[in-house]
Amino acid sequence: MADLQGWVDVPVRVEPGGEATVISAEDRALRLRRGSGDWTGLQPFDTVSLVRVTPLGRWWAAVRGVDGAELQLGIPRPTGADRRRYARQSVASTITVWWPGADEPAAGRTTDMSVGGFSAQLDREVPAGVTIAARISLGDSPMTCIAATIDGRVGRARFAFTHLRPADRDMVAAITWTTGADGASVPSGPAWLWATAGSAQVTFDATALGGAVSGEGLKVQRGERVVVAIDDKLLLARVVSLAGGRPRLAWDD
Image 1: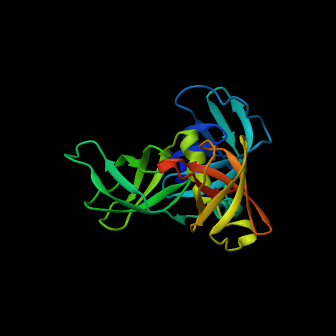
Image 2 (image 1 turned 90 degrees about the horizontal axis):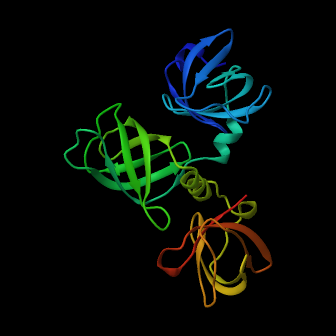
Image 3 (image 1 turned 90 degrees about the vertical axis):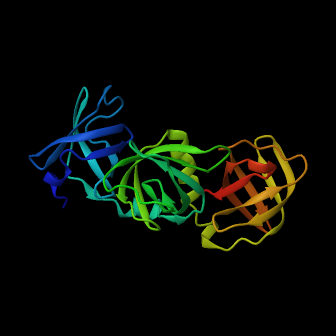
């Protein structure tokens, strides 16, 4: 059971729903308030997923009531299945981190990432507790996000996302929610790729998270779900990048 008082004044993300703040914890329930807008589409007995910033964690709760900008939830509980679904994966991408008062941004590389947050090796320390803006080189252009600093030490900084655009969240999920078909290791080599625009013979270069493909007449779009045929296997994947003319794929569920 969660310590309900520990949730008060903590920023959370409600999925589906958006950003909110816990304003009270009483009667074995949480009451949340949005900064703007109403909780459209939610009703009693719905189940929502919560991303709590401090300490970082993913939880689930049932909706008890909706009143305009306020949402009442039952007791939040750890979401073990969701943690497995969005487990952290090793992701090495260039990153710059900025916060109010910084004379210049910190720079470095991410070391791992999930839809809840990321770790990075930076060239300077980030003040404890500060909210930062980050640009991370995922996909065709840098992803810009807002995050809370969990640990700002040089070489082992950790951050929790507090604002991630839906499209960017989908991309992070595609990159980190990936175990391959039946957990099997997929080899590099000749393959077929089937996309909305048709099929084409390609060369598949395997990576830890999926692979990159190249070939003539290959037409795919970022975010598109495709099928890759290698040997006698048909594998589901999502296009997460088109950089350099070589689409990069992440295994899909």
